[in-house]
Image 1: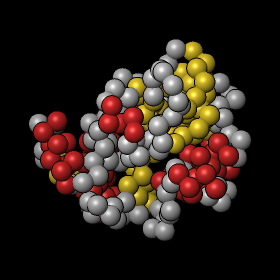
Image 2: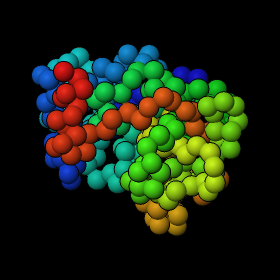
Image 3: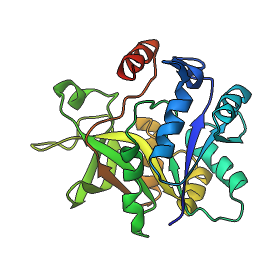
Length: 241
């Protein structure tokens, strides 16, 4: 296995425009994420962006950048274009997609997503954390993973939903949107149209399941804190003070 880490970043976030360059205690947010991805030791780290401003900041910090088109519907499409340009010979068989709005993410959480990829039958791996707040069990903003246990802390994903699932006693699992893709699976995924359940739940990962791809998940201790709003940005500054 020869993974590469790609961080998609764009300036046009609706709730916090210019988010990747938002200052967090003297450093742009994208640089915090880039440094943590480097610390994960999971492979080369490259920021994939359509923004010259983001590219300039990353390069000034010593990072690698791959420019992409500005019309991608998702981060998966952006990293697919970036990977083709960075590695046309196919040396990297696994790509880690790390969101650029996770400035406090533990580097160990990033590398954890690679564990299921040791099994060649796995097309896509992701992360979950056990839900420990009652309000999160019913919140539609908290995506739940329904899966079969393969080993302690390792699941084969059967479904993702915004509803409270599965029914009955037992833990619920909060899905974390960090993915390790088999390169061939990523190419297949971006060539598919959005699937019916993907459109209904507004969850991109359902396209992979509906196409028959195997998706595994690894449990980690906590959900990484994502920055989506000005209030989140204030909290991130406090967390990293």
